[in-house]
Length: 95
Length: 271
Image 1 (spheres, rainbow over the protein chains, first blue to last red):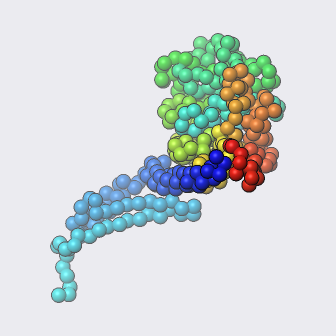
Image 2: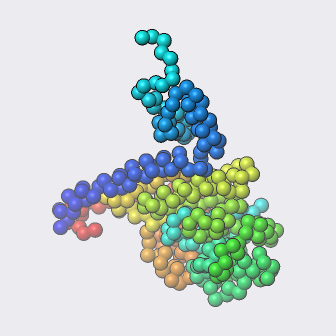
């Protein structure tokens, strides 16, 4: 009984670790998303940036990703734009 | 100067009312004039845990509506000097409490010279919970070592930091404390339960105390006698330590280590 328990305990071991890892990912995500910690000018800025980009390149809504990361000392604003494979309207200098 | 202290958690059933009862009793026993207010309108239970349910005549909603004076509604605890209970109303009206009304009651309590005003928050993040924390100077966030409770505690910390009066008026932030309840060191030892360190790392809030999972808590609520009044129990002692820390004392954490079994003990013993 006691001998078996030792092995059984081993197989249970990761569950608290799993809980911690899941929580860390989830909470980091929720803190980034939650209105309370995200600057409220963000949606407006997002819209304007998108408009500026569209003056030059046509991009879909889902081609632009905005993310705000919170660190202890600073906040990081990340903007990711996936350009379409073929640039439309842009004049290429070479070729 | 009165201090307004909210006991909150987001999730239900983690021990908010048990904690409110214990902490307010402990503060009163330390000589602080203390009142504990039940904000769970419609589902009052603090009166039961405090053992004053048969003496409720008026409640906080009556005071706000001017149907009773504050001193008529306050119930003086018979066993603990300096301790008063302000019960919640059993009305189903969700809008019975207002920001203005609660503010008025708190002002009156300040004038009465209370050192500590402890607000027992209802579960959830609805109106009652928001009003309980709105005027707080300090917050005790109660959390079990359990994944959904930790998540909800984090949500609540976000709300304290953004929706409280202090946040809205740009004053210094609410002082936050983490209180871990229903902690089982042996299960932490086997890796089944989040540890104190895990929870502190995730929530990043200073630790006020760790209350072990204990039979004493159920017995205390059965008897209507806050668990801190029985200083022979582990939970009672752990709450007493937490009150000491709240008052600025430096006390080592107890009840967070499991008793170490010998190798042979583990081999042959049953847990």
